[in-house]
Each structure stands twice: as C-alpha cells, then as structure tokens.
Image (tube, rainbow, N blue to C red; front, side, top):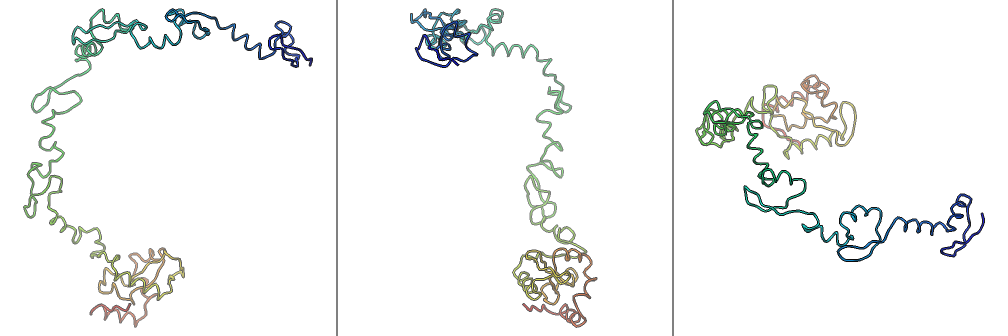
Length: 310
C-alpha cells in the first residue's frame, strides 16, 4: 500500500490496490468521493411559492415537476383544497356540501349525489336481489327468508322461551300448593321443590337408605381424630402411614347401622386405596377388624343409645 494525499481534504491515507483505478480518475479519498457522489444526485432549485432555493433530492423530483414547491410549502398546502384540487359541491338529494375527490368526479356528474345517498339508492334499487322475503305462516306479514315467523308470532305459545306448563309466562302457580311462582321456576315453589330431595330424589340416596351429610360436623371430626390416634395414623390393612392419605372407615356400614355412626369400636383407619376396596363389600372385611366380643357389643349398642367414647 502506498501513501497518497487527497486533493479535496488534503489528508494523507494508504491507497489500497482495489481503489487505485478510482484514485487515478478523481484523486480523492473514500469519504470525499462519497460526498461528491451525493452532491451529483442533488440539484439546486427554487420554490414557486416562497422563492427559496433548496437541494432537490432524487426522491422528490417527481413531486417537484408537478407542483414546483418545497417541502414546507407542500405540507402547509396539503390541508387546503388548493393543493389537492378538490371542489366543494352539494348533493342534489340531501343538500349537504362535501369535498369532491378526483376518483368520484365521473359519478357525481352522472347523478349529482353524495356517497351516502348513492349507496342508499343502490340498496333500494337492488332490494329484491339482496333481501328476499316471504310471508309469516300465522299472520301473513312479510318477513325475511331466513326467519320462520314474525317477531310477534315467534313469542307466542310454545315458541316463547319462557313458556312452561301450558301457562302464560307472567301468570304461573305452583302445582302442589297453588302459590304464585316466578317465570323461571320448574313448576313448583321453593318449599315444594325441597320436598323432592327426600328419599329417592336425594342425590345422597344410595343402596335403599338415606345417608345424611355428617362428614363436616364436629362430632364426626372428633370421632375420626380419635380413631387416627388410636391406630397410630397407620392403615390397618397395608400399614401405610402417609399424612393426608387416610380415611375413617365404618366397619359395619352406616347405611345399615345409622346408630353406630359415631361408635368408636365401629371405626378403623384405612388408606384411600384400601378404603376403595371395601366399597359395597363391607361385610367381607368385618371378620378382619372385629372379634366376637366387639360384634356383640355393637349389636347391643345398635339397639340402645349411642356410646361415644372419644
């Protein structure tokens, strides 16, 4: 590499082999050559409106040929009608003034309407094509082809979404007691509807007996904690002692012996897996957990009052 001097900035630089041909033509460094090329692309012109001279870039040559304005004058005039060549005209139908754009000049000369009135007229002229109609089967009114009944006929009798029991939606009474009820009820008042949960209608009714929801009572929690402590928090079938995985099991099922629900001798600690094995098979595991003396004691306790030993 040879050291040479730029004729424009008078700075010394190393001349590489790949730019020797360019230096022989202009004898300039890389920065000066780049600036000179930029100036060649630009030309100095004057604005017709403000008489100010400015450099015209390549990207703005087409706009300058149209209007002969600088960027500031063009931006200030874009908001006015003079630059856009927009005429202010009035509609022959609604008498509203609007700006007439270049793309709709031919349409305005034909009908003299604004865009809103032109669209409305097009809709009315083509109403039969876009809105096909038919007649309501009950009253004969003109309705859309997509609907089955008119608005009034669609809310009568069984077509009404509030129609129940063959009565009007605003005048309904309970079937059992005759009390007036709301429009969204099932045909019975709240008191009569609660009676349906007794017996077979109750979701807790299983195996021919009613099972009360006693698992959340304090008495049941005391019974369960006493059994856990007596069995040292271990399952009597598999020997697991995992916390949170234990259940209190009634040896004699509570559906057949409701008086022994809180009897301590009738309870044993099981894990969840072993407890599921005893479902509907409680009598198969009685001999494993109880002896003859405990069975005789439970028979006596079932006849008399509860024996709470916790």
